[in-house]
Image 1 (tube, rainbow, N blue to C red):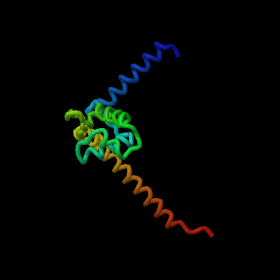
Image 2 (cartoon, rainbow, N blue to C red):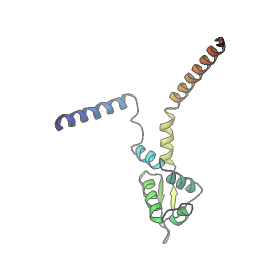
Image 3 (tube, rainbow, N blue to C red):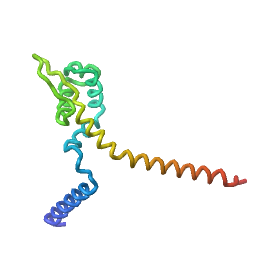
Image 4 (cartoon, rainbow, N blue to C red):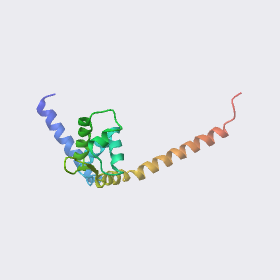
Length: 143
């Protein structure tokens, strides 16, 4: 496939996807939603956020429960900062991290848009299972 054809196909696909997202009202999500979910995908970063929910902490405090170096924790903090989930202050020589809940609330709001879909899917599954159960009870046993 020629490169120009692939580039045009990619451009049209992106345009089409953008139009679909506008029509289906999915453009209201915060622009950093991908960064938020990427940051939350790592168990270490989720643990760091859980710790910060109890109060501010420095890198040394955050590194204690993990078997990793302070620079590794600092890298995790930078990912969380870029996602807007954490902010760092300067307190003399210490740089304590603080949880910022607003971006997480935006992610929760975005997920709640799908709650109706999930609920109806589970309701349909419940109905199907009930129908199968009733059909099984009516069926005579094979001897």
